Length: 127
Image (cartoon, rainbow, N blue to C red):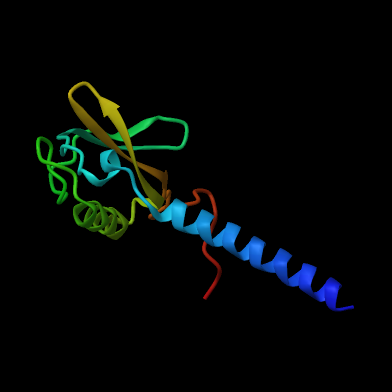
């Protein structure tokens, strides 16, 4: 009985050391990953649909600026501003390499709404 417990404890200890070593090995980063990549410049900003149809190509009033490095805070503020217009839903930002820099696409669903519906030919009800 003591031999079984001893073998079981050895197996648990060996498994713990193996998993612990794998976890420690996974947390180490090579020297090439610790250096920060050069910040690439933003070449264009667009609003597109899921199938790639361009809804708006030149966006001037957003916090992200063409020719500047892309920053996450500016992307989040731009998404908030696009939501506030009411024209778009389900926004997400996607970055593509383009030439010497990157292109930022805001993928969205268009919000379609009707302002006024008029039906001709109907008579109003009697009052």
